[in-house]
Image (cartoon, one colour):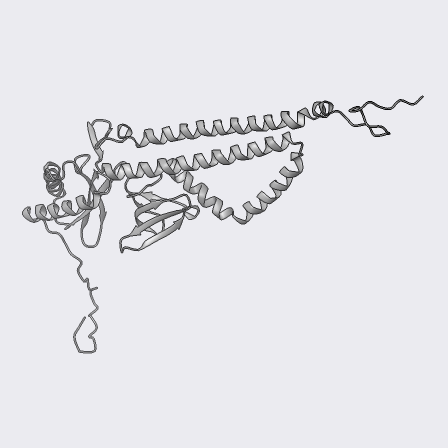
Length: 332
């Protein structure tokens, strides 16, 4: 006796239809579990990125806000002396601080985004069952090739980041970078722009900067070498130079530019023209040249008033020799 399957039941024959409930049950992990885990990974990484960017932004804003700005006069205590003025250019200092804060914040934000993106891609690939070993090996080979070809570019960016973090120099500083000597106009991650005395703009790769002389940080020194005749009394010369320095120190136009009293260091050398006496004083950064010019003027007036000769170069003839006449018959 043959039984015919009821309507709606499994189809006859060797191939039996699998109920939808059984198929969904077998593929629940692939249909629901994996997408949910991927979505959770994306949400968590986006939340971490938002929190990190907010923290970076708050740090940058704290640096840039007026309350965090440097005061108009930044003071430094030295042994045996009171507070002394170091910086007065508040606008330049703020511009320099803003550039450093924004650049470093941008670099940190970009680096954090790249790291989170790579981490997210790796976690998603792991969820879908793709082996990461071969991909990481291939990425390592490609990264090594790119890094070898662009090593100078990488060195420029790393050097630029270290320059900003260490605050080696900034916009408005007077620096000596080798051939490029002048005022810094821009500091980037790859290039530094320096305007020289003649107005030329130098573009220097940060990776090529081997040493930096910064004349704008903390304090500077005005140094003046004064030459007097051998017949001059050095004690009198010292007293005249100290008096000239004292008048400069008491001048209202220069009292905020000098960080200490003008000091006579003593005899620097014995030259053919005379005795060289060195005078020096610490000054506010970038003001040493103006102070030196004014000190030179006052020293000249003081030496003239004290009737102390400032010698000049003379032609010295060796005994027994006479100057040779030139083509016109004039001896030289």
